View 1 (cartoon, one colour):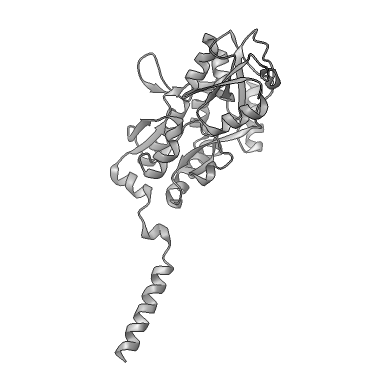
View 2 (cartoon, helix red, strand yellow):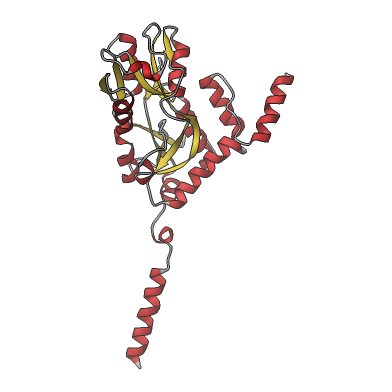
Length: 284
């Protein structure tokens, strides 16, 4: 009789373990962040206007401001955030190791990246273009596919693949930051550079001798917040904040930050609200 009870107990115990959700068995990053009292965010410090060091030596940018809003809403006050300046090549490792709680670093969702980290919905729309100096003769993407043309790439496989496919005749040179890519164009080390469209437009607005290609290398893409794989609770919290920024209660703050860095109001993702906003702007 005792042996039957023991077997029954073991069966029930095994069933309880088997059907216990993984999120209940392991602590979420959300728990870690709330206990710590601050969130650690991976960002770029060399990619204006998303993340860069200004003339005062301070870390500023669109990504920085968006991360601060998320941290403020998470804790109900400012200052509960720590930034980790990281290179693009370190993003996945730092996210999955827990060195950062999440990253916001002009990161495009494409190819195999969703198998490496978990992405929220898009916090800003983007795409890849070429930037070059005026008079370079590079007005369209095809203009870069010539011998004698040097294209500056970032140290990511996607840019290398695109370059080899779209302008195989060009010489390729590699840099570890978008700022270095752009400086290579301005100093003549490269004739063109692959940049995210918002970054290219910002550079063009700051420098009269720079132009952006008329066509895009990629279709419009999504830039998203990223975190480690397998933590649904933490991902859901981040995705909820991003959703509220793009088309919910936090849109006014999002629009203010967007206009600060890009000079225009971002389109609202709900078309009927966007129509109302456009009508209001036209009336004023």
